Image (tube, rainbow, N blue to C red; front, side):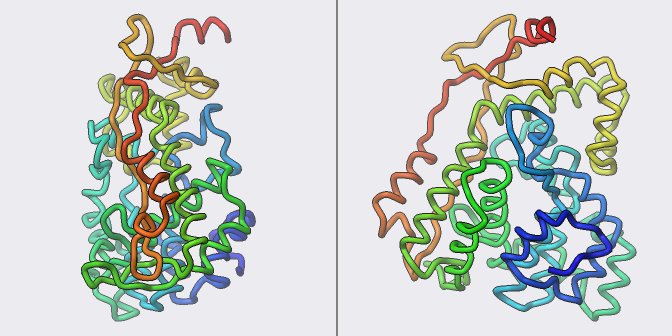
Length: 347
């Protein structure tokens, strides 16, 4: 894949080139608008890049994810409108992404941060000029949810869901290799779902099982006590800073994560943020732990039941159904906690 003026990490280019060997020429100018460039400073993994609880291979941004989604859509549709809608679907992502959903008490749907997407696009002057040049209406790229290849309802497979499951497995979870991702991607095709809509799906049961197993491994990360506590701790730091009038909700949508971290490190909560950075263990409990930093959170379950030929994998593979059911009915200890004071004293 050719290098862009946007200077994408070669490791990320290697990964993205699985989806499409070249970035389409028409797409390149759209990558340069300021709303997309800001996403380079917003991580896909909701602040998990900054704590020892997780071990990311490298920083992977919302920009990278959005480009990946666009390349997948282009690969399957060669439709400029759908591709651009996929590229632009995350322009409203705030710092630490879904952490702000936690701040908004939107743990289950994690959609509160999407509300300003259309407003941002409507006022994106560089974008509007490019669309006018290319004779594309803003309405055709403003909402990717109207294109089922780009986005659809869980547990179906879409470009968005496919990309973040693969990148999570490769970069955050370390349970997917690039060769396995190639195997998965090369088996995909466009199918028709139970309702007559187009959906990305698999040609073979074996490869559908490989994807489903690894998608469930990614889902376990999102459901883990480590993930829930890390996101809530970051949300609580940001809430305190808002209460102190050090930041505003608008700042979350305008700053990069590096800029927000700089503000946190110069705030009264810098020592708590340092604890977040150095965390290596989160404990579980059946009861609330007093005197600890303790959270009790139910979160969105991000499993996928993809089509293989014209049936859901759960209908044709008992093993795949077992993996999916493990996520659907997953039960963790009700509480997760850390001891912030003891942790500070150790460091």
